[in-house]
Amino acid sequence: MRTPKIIDIPTDGGFLRGQLQLPDQPKGLIVFSYGSRNSRLNPRNRFIAKKLLQEDFATLLFDLFTPQEYFEDKREERFNLEFSTRRLIEVTEWLKKQPDTARFPIGYFGSGAGAASAITAAADLGPQTVKAVVCRSGRLDLLKDKLDFVQSPTLLLVGSLDSQNILAFNENAFKRLKGTKELQIISGASHFFEKPDKLEELIQFARNWFLKYLHFQETEMDKDFIP
Image 1: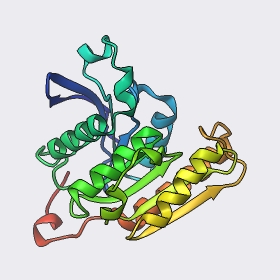
Image 2: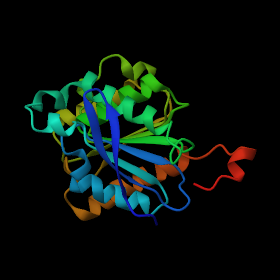
Image 3: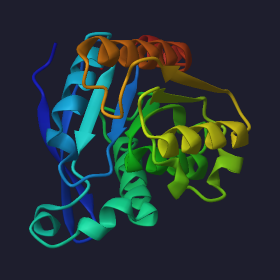
Image 4: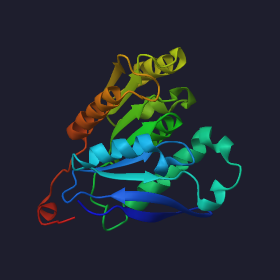
C-alpha cells in the first residue's frame, strides 16, 4: 500500500487540497463528494475511504473550497448545486489528465448535498467518464432535471431511521432514474450511520456496487501498464 499523497488540484481562484491514496493494483478510483468545506477531513468519509482502499480501490477525498475560500464566509455554497458540481467536474477532468490516475475508471461516492453533486456531474460527464455512483443519505431534493439524464449505474443508500424528508427525496429520485439503479433502505440506520455495524453494512453495499460496475476494460496496452 502506498503512502497517501496530499495533492493540490487547480481550480478558479486557487487550488483544492486533496488526499489521494493508491493501492498497488487499483481496481478503479473513487472520488468522494461530500458537499462541505472540510470534505477531506471528515472522519466518516475517511473511514469509508480506508475500507474501500483495503478492497484495492484508489480513493480521493478533496476539499470543496480553496484555502482562501475556507476562511471566507462560504457557508451558502454548501447547498449551491451548480458550484459544488462544477468543482467535482473540475477535479474529475484533472484526474483524467494525470499520469498516476488517467487510466483508472472513476466512480463517485456522494453524501448529503454532495450526493446531488455526484449525480449531476455523472449526468453531465456521462457513463464513459463516471462508471458508477453511490449516494449516502442524499439531499436529492436539490436535483432538478438531471435525474432524467443519468446513465451511470446508481446506488442510493438511506437509513430507515433517517428523516421522512430524506427517505422521500431518495424514493422519488429512484423512481425518476432511468438507467441501472438500486435503492437500499438499511434497517436501523440513522442519517449519519453512527452505529458501527450499520456503517459497515453501508460500506459493503458500496463495495459490492463498485466491484460490479467499476472495473477496467482491458486493452493490449493496459496489460503492460503498471500503475
